[in-house]
Length: 244
Ligand SMILES: Nc1ncnc2c1ncn2[C@@H]1O[C@H](COP(=O)(O)OP(=O)(O)OP(=O)(O)O)[C@@H](O)[C@H]1O
Image (cartoon, rainbow, N blue to C red; front, side, top):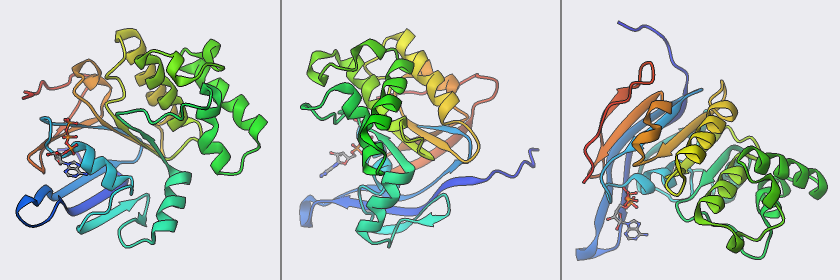
């Protein structure tokens, strides 16, 4: 039996979230308990529509739940004032959205700089750091390009660079490797491994991509608004899941 004490980075308990009113009301998160540990890559899998993106948004503080408590590195997000949540997120959380959310009028280096500029870092320093990150995701020579001049996979890597540039303690990713080929998927996972899978940090990834399961420390399986099982991934041997 394992007796290791794990420090918890993200602790969510009793999360309930619904959309709509009256007859069209849909309860998407049905009393979810979820933990992610300090220093780990935690993956979240489950069938389409089961609530994964909704849960990520609640954990990142971009969506409020009706019930439940959320603690991120010891700070309670539920009940925190909206302005304080925004500030907390800017300092501590990097979010990679399914839809990338890059700013079309800015070039790649400027897009990646945004989290640093929000923190008050000088633009030249921010841009140097942004170009360093772009280099690490294999896009060092494309920093001047606008997002529309890049392929979907390249845009995804720009979004990943932007989420990591300010070295957030918590990185939350919705399908970060969905548009990437095997080589770039591996490059990005190795970057998560180096940059974010360290003490004092944590990475949470929603994925359907079984090529990356072996990078996880644990995999939580979600179904119909609930976490139904949590698997430990030992020695890179990931379980296989049924997707619908
Ligand atoms: N803003 C919203 N308004 C109404 N319904 C919503 C909203 N956001 C999500 N939903 C609904 O909540 C359910 C869960 O959606 P969610 O995006 O969390 O699922 P998911 O598990 O991430 O799916 P996928 O793997 O397809 O991305 C779906 O039925 C979806 O239609």
